[in-house]
Amino acid sequence: MKRRLLIIGVLMMTLSLIGIVRAQDLSGQLEIFSWWSGDEGPALEALIALYNSQNPNVEVINATVTGGSGVNAKAVLKTRMLGGTPPDTFQVHAGQELTGTWVVAGRMQDLSGLYAEQGWNEAFPPDLIDLLTVDGAIYSVPVNIHRSNVLWYNPAKVEEWGVSVPATWDEFLAACPTLQAAGVTPLVVGEAWTVNHLWESVALGILGADGWNGIWTGATPANSPEMVAVWNRFSEILACSNVGADSAGLSWQQAVDKVLAGEAAFNIMGDWAAGYMSTTLGLEPGVGFGFAPAPDTAGSFMWLSDSFGLPVGAPNPDNTLAWLSLLGSVEGQNAFNPLKGSIPARTDAVAAAPDLYNAYLQSAAEDWAGNRLVGSLAHGVAANERFMGDFNTVMEVFIASGSAEAAASAMSAVCITSGACAGA
Ligand code: GAL
Image (tube, rainbow, N blue to C red; front, side, top):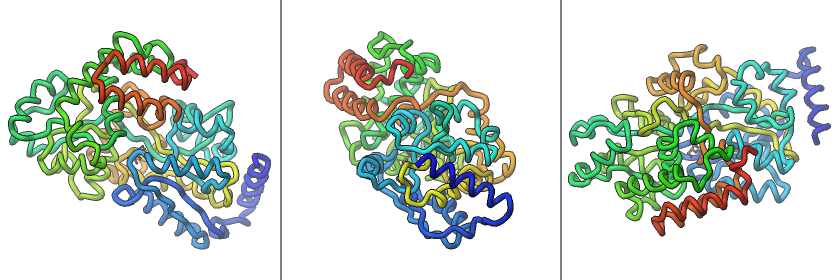
């Protein structure tokens, strides 16, 4: 298949050089697999509309499986990949979710020829390309950069309750009784994965950027006193949340809705929440919704990147290559990101059309350029799927038992069985 792709690539390059093949000559289908459905759909739909206008004879199948952070989509994808019926392309996070899961299993095709053809080695940050690369081969095309460690709130409500936006967890815990007395949930979380999402911001706050990165190199052992301190602090924070009440039944959007409605004061979520509030709900950043770094994490940008690749056995590889070319272009990134709540992965796209980016996105772009960067666990950068699956169990055990020591020791075991904490 590698050979077939190489031949297609060389052929397309040669033909396009002599002007014979134009994008509109493509036909057949393109199945794009992701979890961007419903409220999460507009950015992807804008990109598909652009693809349709460039390739009117290709029928795009927008195959989505609902569920934040891909909880359901990843299970369906696994069945399809292992069953030999891969989609033409699928959403996959840059980092270990790609390399430690699909590349290591030999399921993805090398796109380094496309990178060279499109000039992407200069357009994307080298550190990001590194996380898509194994043995010199590059396996996906990043469409965006999202930030995980963001605190969201409703400015009018926070003022009404007389609390300030917490810069530290100490400040948050001090405000917690006031909010509870007012009948407000101090911190709202949703279904299980959003609890993991909160955990990574809490851990970053306690450990700092070096300590967080050290989890994945072995420098911060999962059963160290620092990690026990993370779980203890997490426990204090959960006591000021709706965990154990209505959290399990809430999607991330419903958790955000509770903040906007004034039923909850704060929520920690990735900046797809900014996309939801600005694109879907039409709110203005800084007015309709407020944002700040998650407590104790100012100066660190916990990042993740959505990317798409070409699986081995994809039925329509030439249509996929055209899709990937669009994803990686300035035009594609600027069609997608302003709606999604993310910033472009390309370093030159915001400058090409700054007016497309609202106040939140401008501030994210500034922080991405100036902050310490650390990879998200909950969204695939830091650890492989094996670790993530077992970490869900660690979290369940912790929530049921409340024991920080037990959680630290269980996480340490998961580190060993998954091999995720040894700098692999
Ligand atoms: C993340 C993904 C985001 C957004 C979010 C909520 O994993 O990277 O683009 O879709 O899940 O579903």
